[in-house]
Image 1: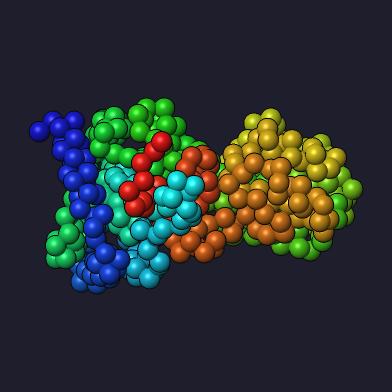
Image 2 (image 1 turned 45 degrees about the vertical axis):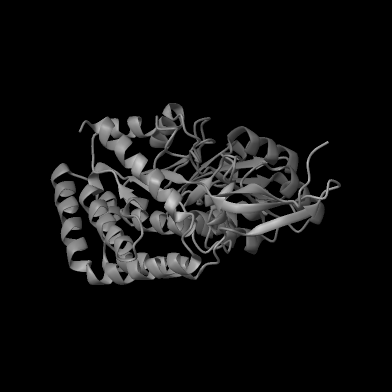
Length: 418
């Protein structure tokens, strides 16, 4: 078969599998998820052998140490996948939940039932553990999933898919519910994005270039976030010690993730007291500060910021800093340069905190907490398949409920419309 025929065939099989999953009980889903966890333990040698093929190819191609680290299925990563399967099995099943039942004047009862989306297309880079994490969440939500990982992880992804599919088959569940596209040619993505009759939702995970390509070329709805340009606004009433801790955690703990802090906005009335203290801690941690003129005057080691710095997602130990006149200017800056990911205000002023929560448009808006809390696990979702900065149909970290939708259900006893 051609690449196009291969992708179409797999998508049709996924659609068939999705229909079969509708009748699968919560107990059945949980049982197969736990079987998958056991299978990862049993098949560890096979998985690691296939993973080594990817690592060897990556070393030959000259991939960076960071990229090779993301590719490696270490004991720690395997344990995380195993525990993730068990955690998803333990989560409440949203499918079939009925809510908002009301009796209408006609006598009919109208409510809403939560149902699977159908077939999820996942396009992602580097980390093969995404294969298991995404498959587990989609299966628990009653969806089939068609996975297209990066070419650098093809052997690892196919090995993991085989283990998962064998577990499905052992439970008499259609193995096409979880499929990895075995084609490394980039044309596969283009063909996948055209299958609007078979695939209900596309979720891209990776760099901004990948996500923009998917968004611009897909005929299928896309849930995405391009980047995480997250801000902290330190208000004039902020506790300086608290603000320093929040900024340090947001920037330094894991600078290479999408919920890391990238820009700090500081009220001019607190800048002289706050910036030297926070700046010293940041510099001690190896953070390069790129500041406005007022920031550079207070922090001699800061580098003057350019216009290109304000919308930048550094994913590194670099922080842009701007002194602002107050809350209004801070919010205007966020409107101009934010990415609708996560925004934070540090303040002891209740009125300002409530204005910030209400007026700032982002998928997560926080008061006196680190941007690093913008995460499905931290928000109590149990696990997440990604973060959406689009508003239809999900906004923010996406857990099980965001992998479902709701349909109207009606009970009557013979009513006809007049």
